[in-house]
Image (cartoon, rainbow, N blue to C red; front, side, top):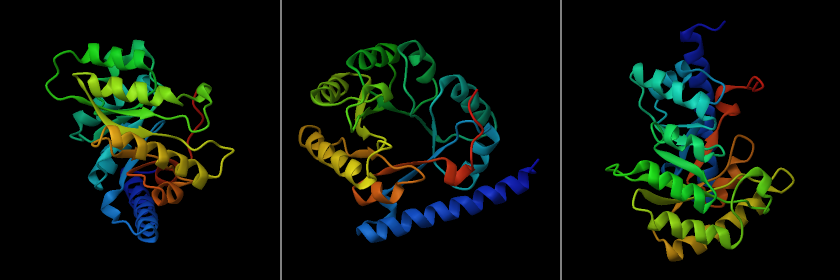
Length: 236
């Protein structure tokens, strides 16, 4: 078993490599590296890794399963780690009340019913919850995400909800698509979105294998797991 000090060294080395990749991709795209936020995806990894990553300067953490994320966020908070938590997995309406207890951003909103559930659950919360509309680039609803006119209906619903703030969009490149083609499609959708909602400029796109293509096409957030934390154990 790796010691805490050894794990910190591992994470520091991986973090430096990921940040260098981001910097190189931004330079190639003619963008400042500061335009891109790293979201460390810590699913299947312990709260101790969240604590170490925040100590290394990581500000944003992503999780995709509430049953894992809720206790992990609480454990990290008990150790003094208070990153900005992103919920990035498919969200069932019966999990909404739990997720809003720790999430600062919900990136996976893909239906008007989910918009309504989030808005009602938040009630009179003073600060609105940031929401990204998950876009299905290839239109395959089985993997989650909105397509076609649903994107605009959901975006308008988020913008009209008193307890929510429309941040922008999130997407995953389909496995059988060239990443450049996928993220070019997403950039076109983003361009249309900001003509109607000028503040919805967040583009969460790109993971360990395709962050360069995502940055080339305007990603403002990249969600990195394997390249940062290592190969995951299979979920049970």
